[in-house]
Length: 475
Image 1 (cartoon, rainbow, N blue to C red):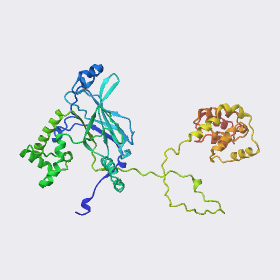
Image 2 (image 1 turned 135 degrees about the vertical axis):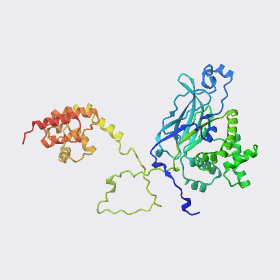
Image 3 (image 1 turned 60 degrees about the vertical axis):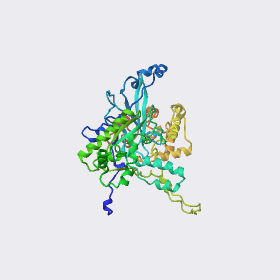
């Protein structure tokens, strides 16, 4: 087979800009697989004994004690690294009679592109226990990516075997987003935890008749040397030898449903009729609960991929060359370690320490003291340099604090540089600045026009500028 024949078409999860959806589904009736999953929740629950209701009287009014199919509801929440990623979403109210069937899509408030590789769905089925009180009927934790679930199991096994080389090579496996229908085991009377080492996994050991038969299917096919599609072999063998311990695996049934296998209608009907009998017998005899869910299907496999982030902007002062006359001699310090750039999403936010310091310094309590402040010769020269700045020159934090401190001293100057050091998001500073406007010397026309720029959006300041322009001469 050539390399072109082995081409693999896929899509990256970072390119999927849609919300993650999950459905408590019901298979359509025309499909052959409809009889396999007649409801979303399969299994029977034994009612509590009479002695339990005597110890807890409200227990007899719960749904599972009052009816065989009470009005349950399902919640789903996404977790990763033992932390919740989304708020829980739940199904709408729906009464049930003969089986539990929701057939409802739940949209989780997270997009597929934002899903981490270790994301897990914590799904819990709830029953009403009393007024404003619910109890879990069962919970399960389901990995959203396929290879990651296998990765967790293999990593635990390799750690037990003390194989570090195998662990490093296994980390390179790709993680594929799950799709289609899945059967999840519900741990009775427990809420799904969503942890990495979960106590409510969605898969358990093979205990049912179907699970036992699936174990030997592939080995039997290899020993007998069958070449025809295995789903058809199963149909023929079940008709010929009804007691033969062979059953089609769930993966083959999923492939058949996705039209990935040859379809022969009369043989498929015979095969699924036998499967229906086994499933019906198990659903009426087992006390375990299983939940069937449906994930969106895509035309191509979705491979996990994280978007590449651009490095944060660096401080230009760090990149300035050293002054002339200085030499730097490299000192050997061992092997060179490459720099690691860490993305800080809060780098552009205001420093809370500096904000608190500014509020304390500019508190209204310091107003009476600031009225009598006069700068010394050194500070007066600094203030004169600040006043000479062009209108487009930004002020540093230290320069703003200096101008604010001597704001009453600067009222004799026509240039309103004081308004540039005001934090317009702070109501206290805005109120003090507006109260000082009548005390200021009348500014020139160019300074008044500057107050009408985009840097000054306060109505009082702009009104003050308009009033000063009205006083100006026509010349």
